[in-house]
Image (cartoon, rainbow, N blue to C red; front, side, top):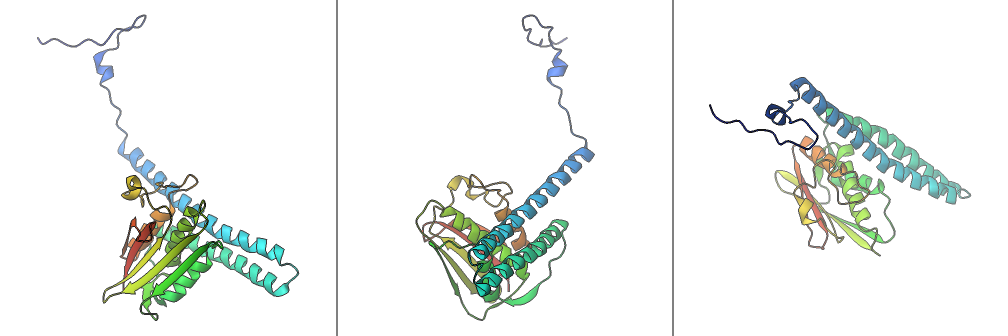
Length: 251
């Protein structure tokens, strides 16, 4: 008969049978599936919270300006309308994100890309030391998309760039839109600190972030929206010195 290894004996303790040292617990398939469902639900909930936070930041800024201009009726009304509009948009965004999580087909319609870009620009608070430049070729380009979701991709990219300028005296964001016979190509780049090489390959994964206060959900949502349009998105270094995000949609 072959020899059998004995478990190590610790002072003052009984030896542990070898079979216990080798025991592994398998998670039942039904529990593993449930854990996956809960994780997915948590990611969806966090994504909704992420988008809601963005909308609330704009609404809060508008209300601050409304208090400042309370004696100037025209400006006061404009600030309040922007705040209420952002709250309505937040409700629409939440519905759209939940639809993505359910796997619902997104509603597409032909829209002028300039209209989507203007809406994305209006949905972020742009500091006075940050410039946002846009070039579209051709200017009358129309893209078949879900305008609300495409706007969220752009606004998330703008918000990320703005946050990257937090410790800088100024910053520049450039958006370039071009098209060929099959695709619309959109590039958003900046002259910020860029993306560290060690996270570049996983930057679109949920909960991956380069910011101390980041959630790691904005870019994951951007990728989900691009793929829901049968497109894709990628990240890399920008010629401006910062980060560049390039995504495309079928034309």
